[in-house]
Amino acid sequence: MLPIVEITNLGLLPTQYEFMIAPEKEVLLVGGRGSSKSFALCVKLIQQASIPGNVCLLTRKHLTHLKISTLRLLLEDEGTRKALLPPNSYIHNKMEKTITLNKGGVILYTGCGDIMSVRSINAGDVFIDEASQLDEEEYMELLWRLRVDSGGGKLYCCTNPANQGHWLYRRYLVDNNKDRRLIRSNSIDNIFLPKEQREWMNSLTEEEKERYTSAEWLSTEAMIYKNWSRSKHIKKLNIEKLCDNIIRWCISLDYGYKHPTAMMLCGLGADGTMYVFEEWCESGKIHKDILEQISIYMELLAQSTEEEPTIVIDPSAALFCAECIAQGWNAIKADNKVDIGIDRIRNKLSSNKLLINDSCDTLPKEFECYSYGDDKKPVKVMDDCLDSIRYAAGYFADISADEAVEEKKSLGVYVF
Image 1 (tube, helix red, strand yellow):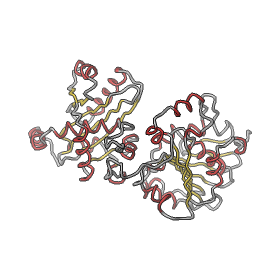
Image 2 (cartoon, one colour):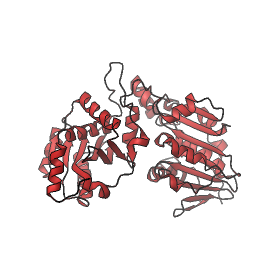
Image 3 (cartoon, helix red, strand yellow):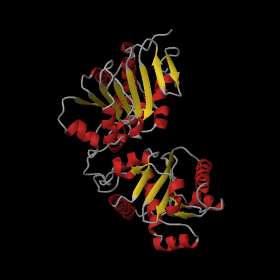
């Protein structure tokens, strides 16, 4: 029987150690990409789960994202990095989503996007990865789970910084509460990253460093979409239930290679509501990969409707647009008027007529980071998904809703 990982032998960074020993009831570790936030969260999780009888709740907005991030860090080797929990030091029950440590307590993991799914759970300590993805109601529900007296009765979380309008910023930096602590971690200070990676980080522009490596929260004054709200604009969307109310479909695409290609499956409702059902955001993909993803969306739609979507493509990707047409698809160049497109999205947000499926991960983050630079122009960083839905909004703006509704009625389709 192998021992649990020795916490004292891990050579923690100063910010990670501060996170480990923080006495407050709520502790938030904020850092840039590669700052080892999740590592610190997992180490503290193991320490608390080693207490016999303790129940540690590990969660993130979506279970699928938790499995490919935090759980991999706990349970799987990756390159020269060994899993934090050694083999034979625990029993993993995948059906019940529990990890029972030898001579210790239990780690219970789940997604928390559905509040009802966590209301029956009692825990001694709670651990949240990417806390900025949660709304405040979900966070508060997790605080209420601290009912097992064998643990520390504390909530630990980590996240990338959002903007100063985010509820986490208010909770940890504006509210004066002695039971909360915020700890900042800069990616460039992570001495455990490969030398080449740290050199690359140091070569970034100051704007890129601020967005990707620092733990600074963006000013709300520079925010482009100040009326964005996770609680208002992120919903659980079901294509099958909504398809009869959709008057037009499109697959919008912002093309890239080093920068990601961002693809959205969108629908326009009869009342003018724009729905974003699916998101695909991947870098390093060739034309063949992107065409395959379009085919996947085509097949997904075919299960619910006979209507084919229009593919609305980044106007700079003329060759790819021609390839789509050669596939027999209806592909057009997008309207790329940036300021007009931004106003369209703002108007949709203000009237609550932009709804995004809760499975989308990157688009909400971009809404919270998209801002104006000193030249009063949008900073071209973390905007690929936003460009994609701007293209969709431009396409939908050119459609006469009245004509589309009448067309559906003539086909015997009920429109709400």
